[in-house]
Image (cartoon, rainbow, N blue to C red; front, side, top):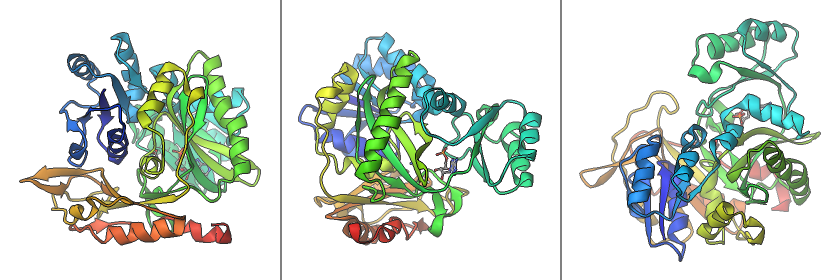
Length: 427
Ligand code: AMP
Ligand code: GLY
């Protein structure tokens, strides 16, 4: 089989690596890919938003399956274009990817189908939003309706901050048209967990849980980023919580989408918060998470191509999805300054240390090749992932492996998985 992956981050590198383990696949392409992905796939210089050119490439090269990694092409309707040409593609159509593309849509869906989430109001007029905020209780959360690289969420502690937030999102349009509409919602307290679900439109199969660390600095300080590190499984996501979520959240969501004529095929990423009143949905994404994928796929036992095909064919109920009884931790190595200004082009040393090591992985996010050497080429540069028999071991090994890599201005958080310590003796 020939497979094409669309995307260029650490997530796509992890997906490409996992596909390379499939016995069914003899050729992998990735568009546009990155310097690290080149080790397992042939990178094709076509942008992820160039749908027609990508579909031409898939047709000309007789690609058997295309896997879409990123949110923008999904929300933009790449799957519809591929399907119209009779190409097999893994990912939700435009009318289902809207579950990530519009927070107002996803909140209304949850309300209509009684899926637990924070109370909210939607506004497309700044004056009305400010009027509502005058009598609201604080803290409160403001969210741009559309895609904003995970940065369109503002947690406001006072009316003044919230008023300023409305200005930033709706009037100054910091995130462009994503802020034409905003959702204002209740502030919830609890631990966050990411659960990725394979979906074939009617059946769901949940992958193992993971936890992200979104803030740039230790102790969850600093600005929001794409994600600075993850661990899997989450010790806080118990079997009891899993059973509740399967029934009242994941299956309900897929059923609701089906009811609305928006059958969801692909990966549904459910961002949960475990509150004292039970689990609630913070957000949905219509794709694998980054860097959740790095800690989830390295623990997955199945041939992933079988699972992708079952989703596309509507036969997911026949799949026995299995994960190793171990743990994984991923620490992101970033360029100093990220998510604000940073320099790139620094030579990266030590990547060869990961070669031929079974339990250690280095997935590339922002790297390039210059004179045959790897150099930094983005904010998030690499994700160092290690497996261990339990979370403590995986964490110690991941941090040990971060020392093998060096580049100028290398920056990482030192407390990825620190929450594990609070889970106590259950581990
Ligand atoms: P989202 O993109 O909607 O997941 O929001 C990004 C981050 O903002 C989440 O991972 C949470 O840390 C935080 N957040 C979002 N919504 C809420 C909420 N209702 N209460 C508390 N924190 C929130
Ligand atoms: N790690 C969060 C995301 O992929 O959106």
